[in-house]
Image 1 (cartoon, rainbow, N blue to C red):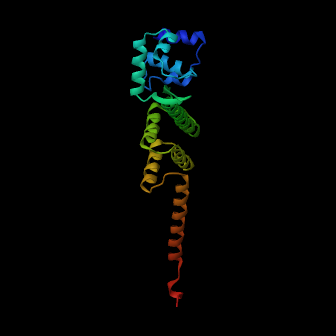
Image 2: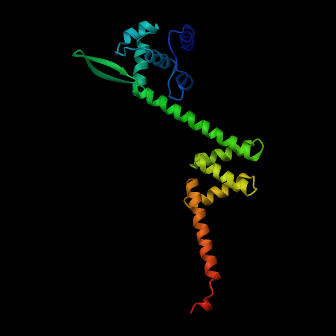
Amino acid sequence: MKDKIRDLIISGTYSIPKLLLSNYKELKINESELILLIYLLNEKNLEFNPAKISSDLNIELTSVMTSIDNLTKNNIISLSIIKENGIRKDVINLDNLYDKLLYLVINEDNKEKETDIYSTFETEFGRTLAPMEYEIISSWIDTGYSKELIVAALKEAVYNGVFKLNYIDKILFEWNKKGIKNPTDIEKNKVEFKNKKEEKKELYDYNWLEDE
């Protein structure tokens, strides 16, 4: 089947989405199903016609039917009934596939953002991160800390002249205890702390003997 995919690419007959080609295994699609999807994505007429698909792709009908069945069970494609000129037709619906491809695009974007976090750390530290440091930062992301909060904790540490991840980890831990989720929460907390400190100072500066 890989030879078949190679032939499709070389022939130039079909436009093959790079996103699908590089991520089909994540969608739990085998090579036969990938070929079928490439075919369907290039077809204007998606009327359910396994015999035509078999003929166009030079693939056995039983293989085509198995691929259609598997893709349907895995919610990659679906079969719908439409009316055209008063005639009911079975068609192949690709909406589920498009939704999954959209998810892959979003996921790739998130991966790029995560990679950017590591670059930010290396820029602020002025050196390349050690493998263990990559794992620690990755664990923060997996825990649910947002990118902006992690970067804010990094900036806080650098401002205090500390370039250690365990220090940043403590900052994130303390922020989490206080319910701080983003930079806006950080500034709000700082203002509240400053106000409390000023109130306390005014209390001690107050001359109780003259208050008569």
